[in-house]
Length: 117
Length: 114
Image (cartoon, rainbow over all chains, first blue to last red; front, side, top):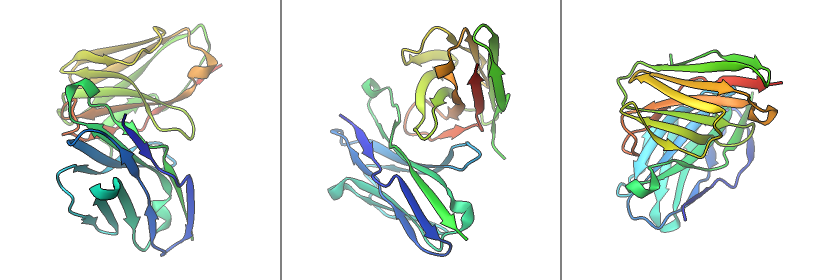
């Protein structure tokens, strides 16, 4: 069965620190997609990244970077030089690529990130 | 600015009321979704419309009734709700109902049932 685990319920750091949010997934499929979404206090979920299972290259976008490691079934997210505006709940999600899964997103429980000024 | 809009932002309704939530997307997407999110939990999928046809109905009670008038609009009709239905209701759209396409979410409607 597919599952996404975000073991860190809440992380609190001081502004400008680097912070890594962990995501571990389980799936029997060889083809799948992983996502990260950000949900600020306003409530809207903001898409950050999609990665497919055949692309293990790390991704960097500004202060954000993602480390995908199939060997450990992890897709971790790092924010460098964190800012107060990064405070939000971050969700990792998995979607399998076969029709019988209905392509649904399997969500992790989320990690609440608090950046203190 | 989000390209998925939802109205109203907040809604308080009694258990005997009938109300509707509205969602509109301006991205030409062919899949639209309704999610329910309780506090401190991830979103739960309720319905998926693909090319204006209902493709997934996650055993949602009949007091929730979705409608997709056209490819840009998605409604959720509410009737005889219970207090436990109080939640954030999120609409999303995507290029298609597959993980090849990311989902873009609206700001949500915070619903309180009294």
